Length: 101
Image (spheres, rainbow, N blue to C red):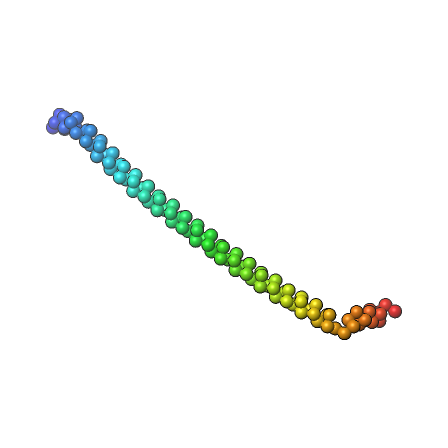
């Protein structure tokens, strides 16, 4: 039996080696396919995160621009009110004159 087995093995070892090579290649192919899918998922997640960051920055910039415009309007209204004040310069001097004398 042992001699028959060794005789058959000596005849079939190239075929067994070829089959083992095909199985090994197939397993490596599946591993590479899974690794590629994982990498593509990580890339998609990173791009989604970058899009969220961009959206938050855009909202922040929009809010800052709105606040700046509101502050400019308040400043413009205050300046217009100060210019419209009758004799504002004289009133200011009179108020300071009360305490200086």
